[in-house]
Length: 523
Image (cartoon, helix red, strand yellow):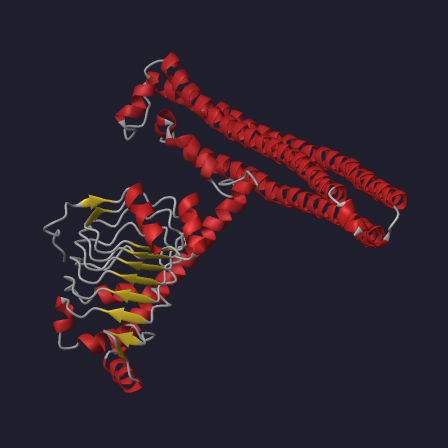
């Protein structure tokens, strides 16, 4: 743990400090001096040394996006922060500071070597993102719980660990415990772990480790199941039919349906609901299965289109390269002939012929590009028609199936209204079952109350069905528009870049020809 230097005030990293550090650590030869004069781009810096600067807070490092090595040891830093943009960082030294907690490292996915030696850290955590971690130095901290070692088992690349100077290093079983629970470790506290020590440690803790492995395997299986479910849900969302492979939509109709829940207590309604739900779920499953099939068709259509576009561009580029190779071969021969020529009229004639060849090449390349544009336009238009037709057919069939859901709801509504009216009549005659809850009885004080209750339930159900249909239609139409628009934008960008590429090449060749020095040629 560090104290502020008596002669220095605590400092925050600013541009002046960073520019000075980069300048001092850069190359000192001519290239380095030139870089200092012209200014150094922080994004080009790969290594940065900021030790012994009395830095209190990490800041202003966002421009160092390609930094690989950062040295911040021997300062008075209290928190790990301001590192989120340093995603290329491989080596980080924060030793000899006043850091109390490990944090702020979530984006450093390429970090291999981390030193937090001599700080105030009491717990090893928040390192999950560091999947490439090989070296971890945590000596001279305040770590006292041996269970922190279990956390480190997730780092499959970890080979070097330092924990000396922590309370746990005083434990009698310290070295054996770590060797047993971190079997891939090669160095502990700067000493190589011998094969003999590793075997003794494994034997001593075998029972506990077997239990731990069993729990870890169960946890891993659960994580894999969750990941599989997430991936499956994403696939269903991509097909716009998520949560339609079961009773989710039906159940959601009753989530906010207070009156419907009350009406379900009526005699005969339970059986009615069960039959309704079974038929409703069958239709939802039909939409779900149809949606997945149509999603696959759209994917095939898009993949085939992309393949056709790629092949057309590649074939066109090959033709262009062939014509350029022919031109350059002839052009070099022409330049050689010009240099060997001694008569000015002949030189001028040959230069003019070269200029004509350059113009002809430009025309050929632009013609090829125009042909490609026409070919791609035809392919894009065909794809656009096909994908719009596929989307239109999908919407039409889904709307037809959703209409069946509404028909079921209408039929259920009629039956429920019939049961409710009969219940009302029983109530008038004093024949209502005594075991009905009071809030259910309150729906049958008069005909208007009963009809309103059944109608409110019906309206909620229809709204849920309508909303799910509208959501599906809106999302797939939006997807279709986005795909088609992106294809057109990409083609416009490709065409502009190709025309620019051709023009730059032709300008370069023409400039080379224009800059021929007649004096040099004649000499």
